[in-house]
Image (cartoon, rainbow, N blue to C red; front, side, top):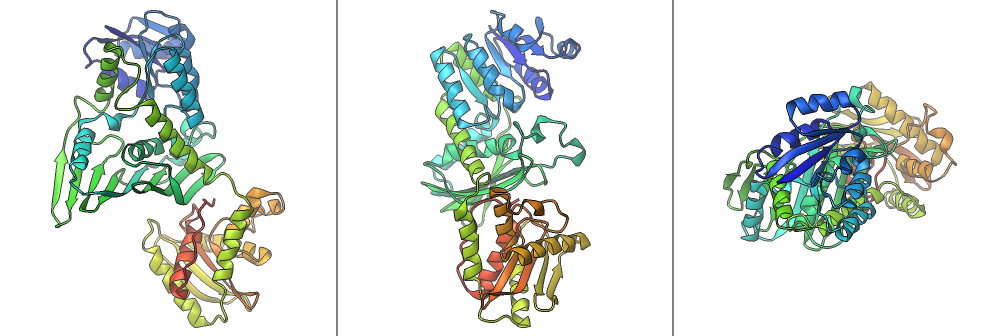
Length: 480
């Protein structure tokens, strides 16, 4: 009989305890937390022999064989190592840890103490995923070319700051949702990711939205995660002979095969009991067999997941002179010999056309600098006068700096030279305003508002590139 303890008595611990009741030869033996009152409530719903105020006290109980670690992300490494050092097996809620370096510490501790550690990555263990893997191996969509993962949900504004999910220490969409995406990419794509483009809405140390496009040895991948929007939480797998939509990537029960001949085939494989059970059963079987590493979710896989997230995070936390140079080169490539009203119309229309490929409406404006006249303005549905105010600030940063507002944003992150602009109420610094140079002078300023995460800037570059029939490299890192 495997005697389980649970570290933490929150919502996820309740779900685990409920599912554990389905596993033969396993019992809930103990629960630990900060409040005896909370533990008593938990014990009433899920009877167990012991309750411990203080996690250390439960780990000192030599009757505990395994624990489910249900604490906030930032506490995982500390308490995983504390348990593993005592020879206690650890099933840890995702993400296992915060970084690849932390994961390597945990892996080393597990191996040196002959104990089992596994991240509770539910999608890897549910029956639908096993069926998907078999069909991919059989070539149902041919050779895999691209994977697009998206796990986004909306956190109400009133909840911000009240949960560790929205704190700088261990919060953010990348850790919470991105780990599911990274697990799929690790399992299906090989090699070191090469980053094509990464965006993030990153404020006060918390990423609210991340969109990263990567290239692997055997295909490309796009990862979208967010706390700021509602969207289908699916994975789209594209191959040479069709594609697959994996529905509810974070806990799948079905997927749809889109064959090259236009046929669609839905494959439904329900959970075995519930979405938790398959990972619990796998972990329990490993313990019974004396195994100290999962064959489904190895230490190498957990380390690579964390590595992928680390690499994505690098794309939007550090800027250097090369980034400023890349933005300056965009301005040089898009400089013109002349600028007329007809050019404003062509540029504005090209940007509006490119905007249709994005998931949010935008406002677009092109102002001539010689007299301040607006030559083009287009407001998509849902845009308001507030967007015009944002564009005013972005335009001011262009006029005062001589560069795009994206350049100004990067500059303010690198040094204090423009620090007074950050919150002065005049320069609303972020990507989204771009100068059109003619003979070394700014002839017009193009402004876009609505997309955020640096995509306002990208949209301008894409539209101008199309209208001017020029190839202008996109900026690789996140803005704002």
